[in-house]
Length: 468
Ligand code: FAD
View (cartoon, rainbow, N blue to C red):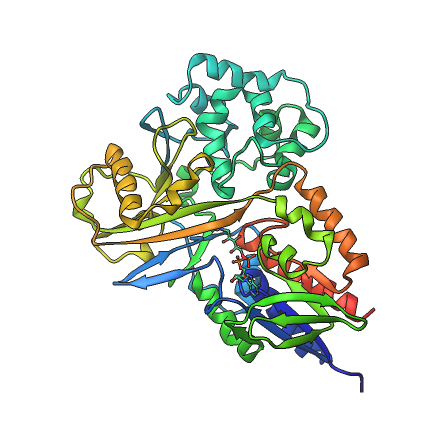
């Protein structure tokens, strides 16, 4: 019988957990002579997925949901038998804060880009000149092929006003980044391809966006596009933890990895050396050059920035909100003097997460130009958020309690050239560090389904490598 091969997964966020799950499944189903170990430096699994359950509230400290249309998320949930615990977000009007006022998000737009023209023309978000400039998209020539910043791409097509008042807060929010640095090819390649194919983005979207069902006729209620679980996103992590069992080591980080004649010597934080035949690195990119300090292949990772954000969840009695808004939340335009970047009325978006008669408001701070806010004290951050909220909502009481979560250097920035940089690193690794694979939010997508998909892909790569 052949000797057992050892596979090490570094990092117990959703990427590492998904990799461990799919690997364990393959090993069991095909009776493969492989052994897995997952090491997580922290004392809990889940990484950025973190749910706090308190006084009947389900509070998400990191992500609050995942996109239902992206296959890897739903597939994993089904495999784990969790589909009956899924909940979709409540839908409703969303708003954008421009010039100190909340405006309804124009109907018939996609990520801020008008698909139907009437709501856009009647919206108070833009000046007549801004509308005219955005309409130039119909006649502007196609841009040059190749990567470019989201900012320069959209400004070229629509002008500054549409970009700063609508497109920027929607697109940059997902990455907590600056659209003038973010790569279009790595973040929203669909827009790039639409321009290359149809020239006008509006025309391209009109041709390719499916028409929404006529609600009046079918009586069907608009369905939310996000999923979470009755008891919060950490449900997924808890299930994976129970399925994986003693494969997982908590409180054990990887300090250093070195290639030897046969496989890799991995120095763990408890001083042990683990000998691995293959390694999946599912940690944030900035840890990788330190762990592989004698290899120059990861030098470029030191130049991939990561921004910080804090989110503030505040629980109130519903009666404390005197000027409630009929909707699920708002995003803040780039030029506003507000320091919050987005606000969710969680009691409306996720009614399952809030006890009857209560309200839960969740806000983000930490624009790329306001990173220092994340280091302020809890009291200072809460005051900033309350001050901003009271400009729109008139909340008369202190929150019953707040949960503030700081995410320092947690949002990897896919800057222009990202896709090519990562492809180059992967190619060099194939020669210099065969059997080591990268997966996770620093590389091919930050969304939870993207991370799960990368974990699954890493398993295919490991198996292919070990099976020669
Ligand atoms: P991580 O979750 O960062 O996990 C990496 C793990 O590696 C960590 O547990 C860490 O402790 C461990 N580690 C680090 N170094 C070592 C070492 N040397 N040895 C061993 N272990 C190590 N996505 C969505 O789809 N929807 C959302 O609503 C959403 N909102 C978000 C809100 C916030 C505030 C943040 C921060 C992210 C959000 N995201 C969202 C993105 C998504 O949550 C992340 O991209 C995803 O969870 C990252 O998973 P990961 O496993 O790749 O990395």
